[in-house]
Structures are given as structure tokens and as C-alpha cells.
Image (cartoon, rainbow, N blue to C red; front, top):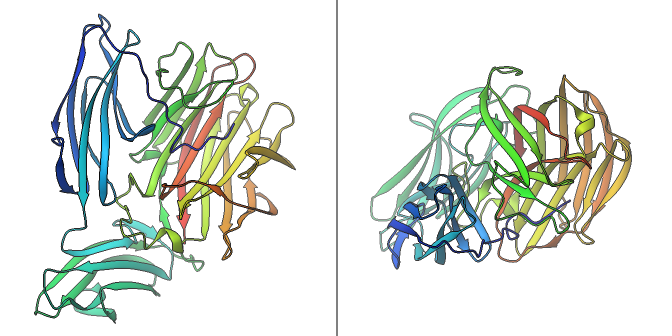
Length: 436
């Protein structure tokens, strides 16, 4: 089942007999620049101890979770005032919260590069998006891009830059620089690797399965909202996410995911905020200059499933949010009840069968490539699905949904339980996501 993952996170309302959350950073009322550093510890009278801690950036918006009684993380937030809450959940069903109000100020003086991200693998032409600020009362004079020391490849007047550079394959230590009208300058280094044979362009987050930023949640019937009281150890739904697995793997570094538990037809969702609010990849796009320009996305992953027939469905989603609109390109390999690919209808909130067969092979690596597009008129196009070398050009066009207040590009990966909640395992490898 498809859910909006940014706003459906449910707060737990139970309280412990004696529990507390001590937040040492930030102090309530703090004004600071993003990212905001959170440090907190939790205590409880529960004999089984603290299960997990989390940070809500708004009611029902759970931005971060961690197992255990300690929390130390940075949250990337756009400028504005946030009434955040740090919460702990214990293993007796209790919880405790501490509210923290923070104001995120505008970007610091200098150059903010929205694209490409540092250490990204990209195709040529490479899109650069950046803005500059200065304390000079006369403002910014110009901006430029160096592709090597003393090699100025591009300049533009003013305090913003949005251009594409044609670069040969290789690694570049580029620099985006601004010059102000008081004789000052500031710069931001950006290292990129341009792939060979990538004429379609775009930027790629490579090997996402091995990167930070993944958060797992249980989704239980009948509502399939995120279960705030569920823990990876169950008993309702059980799940795990283990990175750095050597076998089975293609790269020597796969990620193992599992599902099980007692609640039949329950699912496990993992999501990662790549660009925009809560970016795990260093692309907060706080000035909202990048995400509205992105129209084409490719989800490319290898997966190995021990028993495909134990799955109700395997789900792979691309999500884009801006301007109050939600663009969810949901793709579901519905194993039970048809072995068919379904796609998500954003307006009517349900799955629609494509009639295209989906038959992942058990105990073998399956290669999935999904390509989608947002048109110039803001329609969603489900372009193609390629599984194990067989491409189906579906070209389904649909309207977008509503997502007020959300801003970002995220990816989802989900495994669904069947009528027996039969446990099974899926490994991920070579998970790449390209945007342009």
C-alpha cells in the first residue's frame, strides 16, 4: 500500500512512569544556521530500558530515529522557525518528550552549491546550480566555475549561477567562486567524477544502498500508516537493515533487508531523503533553486531475494515534492495475485495494474531499472520498467497529488508481507539514482 512518507509518521502518546529526555544541543530558542546539531540522552524506569529516540521537526513529521538511549546527529533544515520535539520510546510501551524551538537563519556568507553534490558521479553535460551571499554593501559582482586550478570555464554576472558544462570522462576538483564589489571573494570546492558514455547527462547518487540516511518503518493493516510503536524486533512486524554484507553481493558490499513478524500483510518501508529538507547527501537546496528544475529520474538497483514467492509485493518509488504538489512514481512488483507490475495513481490513491508480468528470480541477482519524468506541465510520466534486460515502455501519464509544505526528492524501497507473514530476505547492491 502507498503512503505519503513525509507526513504520515505517527507520534506515540504513551508515557512512562518515570522517564526523561535531556537535550544538551540545541538549546530551546536557539537561532543557528543549518545543519542543526542535536545531542540528547534518555532515561526510563522501564526495566527493559530505552528502545529508541527520535526527532520530530513538526507534528507527525519524524525526521530522525536511532536505536538506544543516546542521540547525536545533524539535521539539515531550510530557514524558518521549527517547534521540534525530541522523544524517547522504552521497551515497556512508554515514551517521553522534550520540546525544542529552533530558528534556522539564512545561509552563511559565501557560495552555496545546490548541484552537483560533492563527490558525485555525474554524466556530461554537468549541471551547476549555485548562489552567493556577501557582507559587502555593494553586493555580488559575478560568479564562476573553475574546472581545474586557474582554468575558469564559466562566469556570469550576479549572485546566482545555473549552467551546464560539457566535460570529458574523469575526475575534476572543481571550484565555484563569487567575487563581490568590495574586492572580496569566496569559493566552494566540488569534486565530481564524470562517467564515460553518459551523454544523457544528469547527476547520480551511486551505491545508495551503502550510504547513510535510510530509515525503516513498519506499515500495518488496515490503515497502513507508519506504526509509531513498532520496533525492528517486533513482535507485530520484524525487520532489519544490514549494510556491508560480502555474500551474496556483486560489489562485495551489499545490504541485507528482512521482514517477518506476527501481523499478516504488514509491510516494511525504508526511505532516504536525498535532496531538499533533511537531505542525507549534503544537498539541502535551501534556496529552492534545484528541485523545481529536475524532470527526469532513473532508479537502478540489483536485488537478490531468497524466496520471491514469500513476498506479497516488492515496491520501488521515486518521490518529488515542491510547490505544494506531490509527485510519487510508485512501482510495485505484485508477486501475490498475479506477478504483475502496478503503478501508483496519485489522485485516487490506489494501485493500477499495467498488465506487464513481473517475475523476479529467487536465489539470483535481478536487475531493475525504472525511468520516469515530470513534464513541463507537471504531469507524471511512468516511462519504462526494465527487469533482467527486458524493457517495457509503458508511457503512462497521470496527474500529481497534493503535498503542502513538503520539499525534496526522496526514494523508497519496500517489502510486503503475505497472508502468513512468511519471513524472507532481500539483498540490495549497485543501487544508483540519477536525476536531471
